[in-house]
Length: 269
Image (cartoon, rainbow, N blue to C red; front, side, top):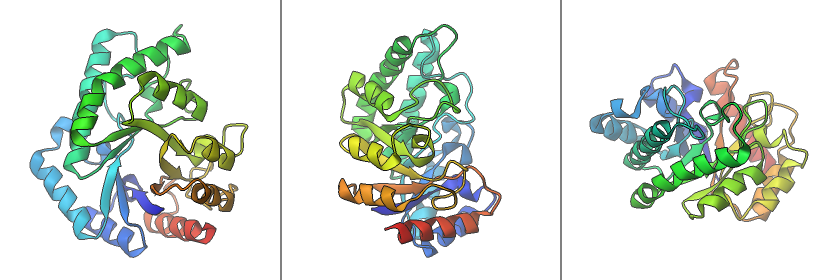
C-alpha cells in the first residue's frame, strides 16, 4: 500500500512548500481537488497543467488523480431529469478525465453528493439509470486516457443517493465497464451497520481506491475508529493501491494533520 494526501489539506500553503513537506513526511502520492486549481476545468491551461505536475513530481510525489470532481461548479448534476444538464455533466467529466491524464493521474473519485442527490419525487431506479447514462458516455474517454472512475458511496448525512457500498456496486454493475470501480471511505463506511473491515473484505474485488479518515472529520487514528483492523483487512485482501488521507476539519493545521495521519497509518500496519 502507498500513502497519498489530498491537496486541499494545504489550502493556504504555496504548492511547492506543500508537496515538499508532504514528501518529507513519507507520503508518495498527491490527490488533487480541481477546485484548488480553478473553479472550472476550462480555466486550467495546458501550461498550468504542465507546471503543476512538474512542481509535484520534482518534490518526489506522484499525482494519483482527482477527487471532489464537481465541487464549486454550477449547472451540473449526475441524476437530474434534465437531459441537457446530463449532457453538460458528461462533457465536464470528459474534460476532467483529460485534466487527470494531463497531470499524470489515473483515477477520479466520484463523490460530489450535492450534484448527485435525487430530485424531488425521483426514485432510486431513475437516479441510477440517469447516472449510468452519463458515465457510459464518459467511458470511451476513460479508456483513451487510461483513467478510472471510482464510485464513492457516502453516508445519509451527505445525501440520498449511493449511501452504501452495495448501492455503489449497483451503479457499477449497471455500467458494466472495468474503468468504473468502487471507492471506499472510512468516514462514509462508518455510517453502515456492517463493520468497516468486513465491508472491505466483501467488496475487495470492486475496490480500486481508499480514503482514510474518521467520522469526526479528522485524519485516520485521530478519532474513535480503530485502524488496525482496517489496515489488516486491506492487507488480507491483497489491496496494493493508494490509501489517501482526506480530512474535512482543518483546525489542527495542515502539517499536524498530515504528520499525525501518516504516523497513525504506519502504526496500524
